[in-house]
Amino acid sequence: MLRVTDGKGRIFECRVARRIKDGAELSVEKQLTIERATPEVRMCVGLCDKEEFGQLAQDLAALGAAAIVPVLCESCREPWWRAWEKHEARLCSKMVAGIKQARSAWLPLLARPTAFSEALSAGEGCPVLVADEKGAPLPLAAGAVQGASVVSCFVGPPGGFSPKESAALASRKAFSVSLSGNRLRTELAAVVLCGFVRSSALPENRR
Image (cartoon, rainbow, N blue to C red; front, side, top):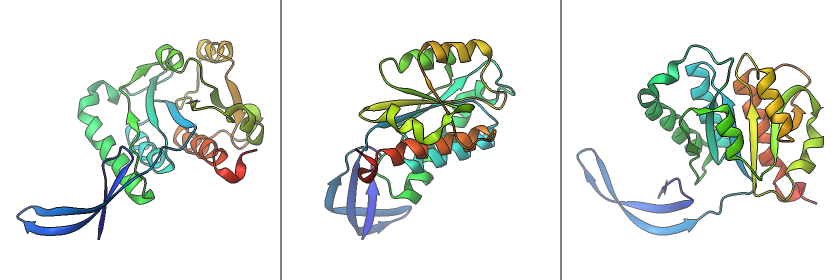
């Protein structure tokens, strides 16, 4: 029995009907629909190096992020993303590998590189968490996400957010959260923050 997903919440249990030259034809024995967990996590991550962003995409997919938004910040460097079409397929393959490993039925939406101001305004109306080594301890952020249907999480690029970007986050009443008390790399901070929001939504953690 094979389990196949369309990445949109459906899982198909299949058997091999017949083998063909480049693969096999499958017959669907059973279809399951998996509801997306809430809150949906929208990860807005300052663009880092190409390889690190690929690993980040794979890990966030495995954790169940609903969307991954590569954010163009003032301190972003080495603009490999200018040829986005060249890299998009590889990043999607990374995400597919992530959901396969995690046995998830949901593939995150991968946005095109987005200006910081646009990424921030797109999350209007939902709570915003921002990774900040000087922020509040991580457990205090649980109250900021309870009851939300969508949470926007912002993680800065390797150079961090600029003063202007930090001021924009503050004006949006973003909740600054310290993930470990240490300064983390962009890709690690994104994974820790996504994992925290996803785990805070588990039934045993709800009040």
